[in-house]
Image 1: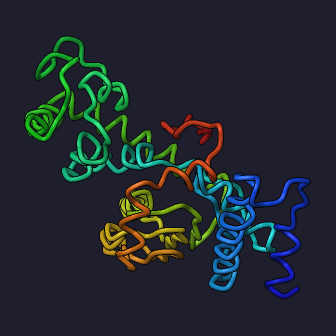
Image 2: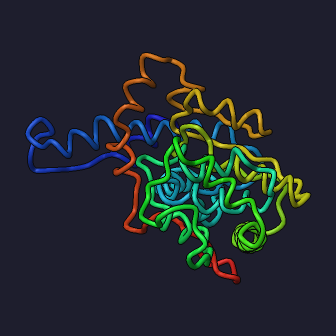
Length: 274
């Protein structure tokens, strides 16, 4: 079928009320429907012989779009910045990743207690300061120094190695033996891809990572420098700036349209279950 024909097939919608009298009809039929449809067509035009995999949570919806348009789509992968960066921390030299986990990647400061819970560390009273203290740019150096000493370091690395092994098990039980991961996601800076690239490099896993993002921000250049291939549909590396600045200021509308009822991925069981 032609693209206009497919668009009519997938987005034709009959409603007793005219579109101009129904906000949600107008938003879906005239804006969101064509947007996601053309994203799906764009993915198909650039798809190689490998399957596409949605990165949960938003990628689950995008994978449905690509699948309904005839794309070869595999099971969704439950990946998050949190679950992937914890796997990266198995390398004790990843000081930047540790600082990102503690401070930079967070919308608001987290308490030391919450961070230790997410790292699954049991420290007793051996803490650098009160567990309720918020970890910020002002005290993060002290926290990193403490996390990189003695028994705490050994425990941290052991836990992260387990996270890394479980993450890889999760991926391979869903993808099988592949040499390329073609991922569908809302995108932005590509932190998940960058983390996966580091995990694959540390474990000598020769897999090429490709991100098909709805929006790619200027931060994606960092992921591209970590051997990730990132392509943005509405914005590539933050260009055009006139669009990306406005979108990234309030991305919640499209994110909520693509999201699901499941929460963010915290980690994985030994059998790879998220």
